Length: 178
Ligand SMILES: Cc1cn([C@H]2C[C@H](O)[C@@H](COP(=O)(O)OP(=O)(O)O[C@H]3O[C@H](C)C(=O)[C@H](O)[C@H]3O)O2)c(=O)[nH]c1=O
Image 1 (cartoon, rainbow, N blue to C red):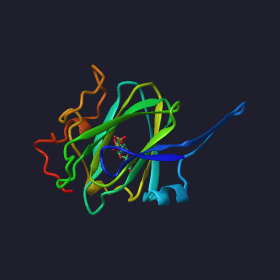
Image 2 (image 1 turned 180 degrees about the horizontal axis):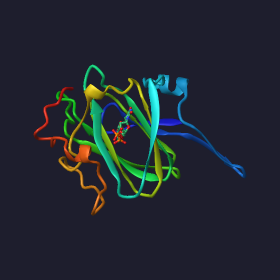
Image 3 (image 1 turned 90 degrees about the vertical axis):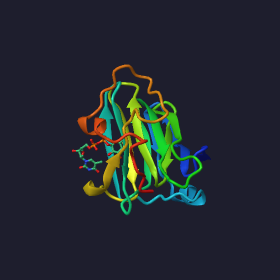
């Protein structure tokens, strides 16, 4: 299990441990010492997963303070283009995005610190994305920014997006709480 920095502080890429043999595959996603050595939290409040077909975009989501949380995301099966955007007002990378392909092939995960919005595009049908969050869902604190309102070109012509996700404010209209 290897943890790498990115050009956004508090965004890390984790190469999950994978063991394959004639039975199939074993994947380890969280390891306390490895996370701790890299200053990452490894104890989460809740975990959930979603299943998305190709061309689905979910995002860009976050929870507002004081319920802002760390998110650890990886793909169990399928492939996604995962995207985060820096919403921390004093950050030199405010408004900057970072993207990475997460898949059952590359067994990479993304660790997302507080102050970022998160979303993804499913690149294959039945892509299963698992999340761990450091603070449980708080409906009143749930928020987002419009997925196509910041400097990122989603490689999809006709994305499938929820009504809720289509109604978020654009990045320029949005006043960050971070
Ligand atoms: C997150 C959550 C959702 N729900 C219910 C609310 C809705 O009835 C249903 C689907 O929720 P939503 O449409 O917000 O799910 P996604 O659009 O897949 O959002 C997720 O995907 C994006 C990319 C993220 O980064 C979010 O953390 C994550 O919430 O599950 C709950 O009951 N508890 C929960 O913690």
